[in-house]
Length: 326
Ligand SMILES: Nc1ncnc2[nH]cnc12
Ligand SMILES: [Zn+2]
Image (tube, rainbow, N blue to C red):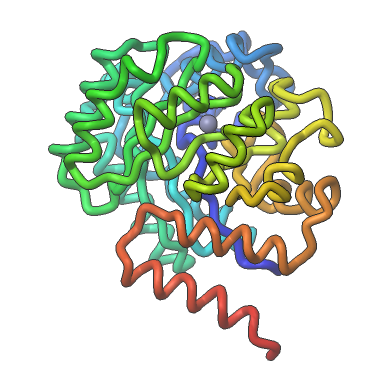
């Protein structure tokens, strides 16, 4: 099995419907508005985001979050992943009544449990939510900068790309860069190439969440390739959310052919009926990536990971060891 790595997954979006139903029973909440017959139920990006918010509201204690992170990472390790970064959202935790610090510490506890059980290495990317506004995003960046958690190594922005403009978040990203965090921003998913270009210009990320609609502007694709910006591509998410009509129209092969560095990610796995193994299988089946190409996707993820060089070295040699014929 090809060793894998995931850089783009929202921890609240990784909660299975079953876990949400358990939480709903625990807190006496009604989830019939967004879960039916054991599956998430929404019909577009806006109703997906509201299902996401409602699911997130059912994680209210440190143990809830530790269990969520531990469960997600153990499942990932079982799919052959040796490394994972996931997006955290202090805003969602605070809206559920938990402090950002307690939230982050308990997710960190889940990471340690999963690492003890499976060896998987994981880090957290604190994110601001675009449609919660610039002040909220700046607050998330300031929290990340002062939280001092050793497993928080990145800052990003997610949420509704149709709201606001990257220039609104340049101060938040300056705070995060100042603190030495890796920088990634969602762009080029529900807005076009101009949104990706603005994200590059105003937030200077080393990675872009999705970024796939950069394909609309060949100049921009060349810039991404030349600058070595890594695209956190989420193929199944893009099809299920209707960013592209089908895999035949997904630009991943063109982006790779143009020299862009890409990784494969599940984004919000149970919402899109996917997981990391499925993303790799889709890339093999629909984009013609053979085992060597899939392994180089994992290598790109490890090279682009927001992780210390010693850990990066250890992960890369695990990948290389798999390459040597037994
Ligand atoms: N695919 C996505 N795009 C933007 N924000 C998100 N939050 C969770 N999943 C997301
Ligand atoms: Zn995402």
